[in-house]
Length: 378
Ligand code: SF4
Image 1 (cartoon, rainbow, N blue to C red):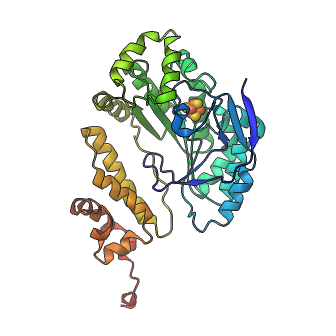
Image 2: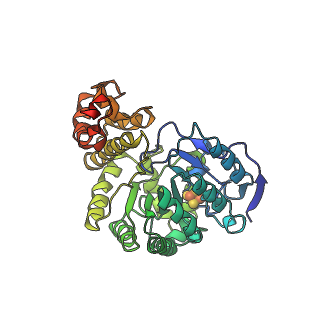
Image 3: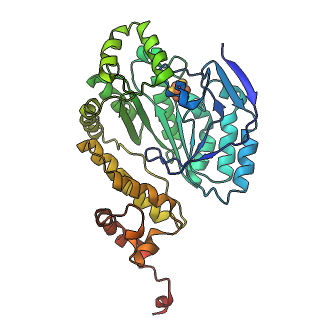
């Protein structure tokens, strides 16, 4: 029996120092603390999230809608940017049907015209297509369904209280049909070694996502195995029909939190090939603001996409380019103006190589051709 505790919180929204380069999130909101879905691999069980009995005790943030409204009303320091909802605790877990905390939050987000990215494992999200559609029309809305297997029996062991994968795919299809302006896709995260990394499952998840209308798929081989979360997961496996994977899993991890790079590298080409086969992008399209940040965000997206794809293909990560892409998001003026002054090298992590890559895009921008000074009278 899950216990629900109603509680008021001081803050409703949290700002990240840099946007998340996978989901393009700049702010996070969690209408609940704790998650009834109780997936047995959930990382929120680890100590770093400070969520005690997170699946048996769910806190309902009763004042979240009011707090959010107050905060966004005086939002000089919170420029509109992508709000991530449900990253740590699913916003569409069962209690949402009754208390509608997520729906209330969405209405406030729609009122102040902020873009949104939602991750969920529950078909209940289709209830809110009306609000999500309005957000998508005004700004940008992305819905990612977390799907790691198509096998319903395995899914009910791993994710006992969320909607079965077939219902998540059906929900994706419904959203795409009713509101094509909403970007939908699959978060194929985590891919659990020895349970979900076989060729059949990899292809199935990608193929079924495409058939359901996915615009993208994000994947991540391996799962984290950290303190309490690792303990819980291994114990569940040991007491199940999947107990035989415990030994190879522990041997693979050898006391590390993440799956070894060699393992991840082996799966990437398979996943990439399958996505290519089904013509499914491996990145989400980013929301681009209309103010001075427009080209900063566009160039940042190009840089971060390049870093990601290069890493998938070569196994090597380009940290300088990654930081160049991230730093761009915090500039207080447009990169176009900096380029016009010939000062790109002054931007943090903008080396000659980075500039070589971004320059052809900048020269194509209409903004660069706009005359802004007295020369506009010539
Ligand atoms: S739905 Fe997400 S947050 Fe909830 S238990 Fe599952 S993995 Fe954790």
